[in-house]
Amino acid sequence: MRSMTAFARASKTLPNGGLIWEIKSVNHRFLEVFVRMPEEVRHVEMMVRERLREKLSRGKVEATLKLQLLPTTDSALLDTDRLAQIAKLVAQIQNTVPGTQNLDPMTILAWPGIMQNSAGDGEALELAIIATCDEAIDALNTAREREGGALAEIMRQRAEAALKLVDNLQRMAPEIIRRHIDNLRARVRDLAGELDEGRWSQEVVLLAQRADVTEELDRLSTHLKEIFSILKKDEPVGRRLDFLMQELNREANTLGAKACTMDITQVSLALKVLIEQMREQIQNLE
Image (tube, rainbow, N blue to C red; front, side):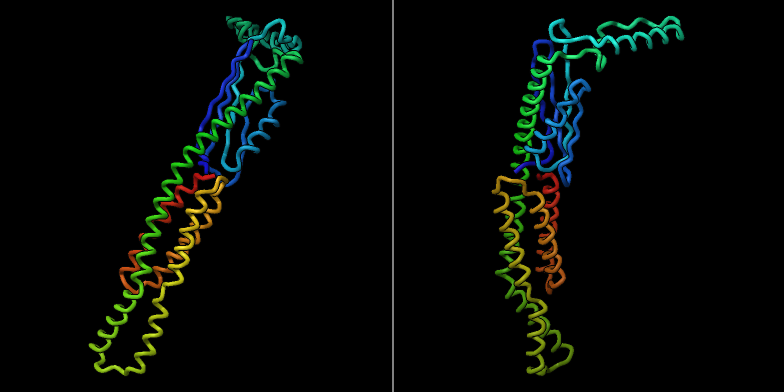
């Protein structure tokens, strides 16, 4: 199980410089990928996107490539047309604004498009970019799994606490309902005196049906146990867990609506707190 929130960095040293991939991800309903890379290697972007989509399923992902290459006579060619355009623009600026400093040639070489890699070096650079991207994605997934493990443990603790509340209430429910009916019987006698036992027996059946929370407790128990099963899966589980939280919250609300005593009301409130705590954690799960 993975979190959707993580950061990873991978770098590679090249004969004429180096490159750095930085990838960060945050929670998102679907997979949304943003890639930032220098124009001279923009043709590699589709391969990078394919790699990200193959290894990630959810999250807002931003991948940034930093390329730092020093040109050499053997590995790069100067784009003289672009250089001429830059020189013409610089001359116009210097004529218009006297005293403008001359540009450092090394600064000009760093401008996008000035240097063009030869075919052989371009292929080697492309392979290095993809391989380093794979390293960064693997590191990102390692971080996401580490964070996901921590979130899973929090989820497990909350689910265990909720299941304990449900189990205790299941054992206590018959006695709670019996006490509730006895209390009502005593109050009615105080108000009306003698009871019509036949009529009272009919009312007891109706009261017991209205106060019966067996089905709600059974469904709560089933859903909570399903959480433990889902947490063991080695696949994206965020959406499935989110659906379970909706079902759990619905049952907890019904339990509170049918509560005939403060004991059941308190359990309903405690369950809703635990469900909300789990739901908050699930927002970060892949």
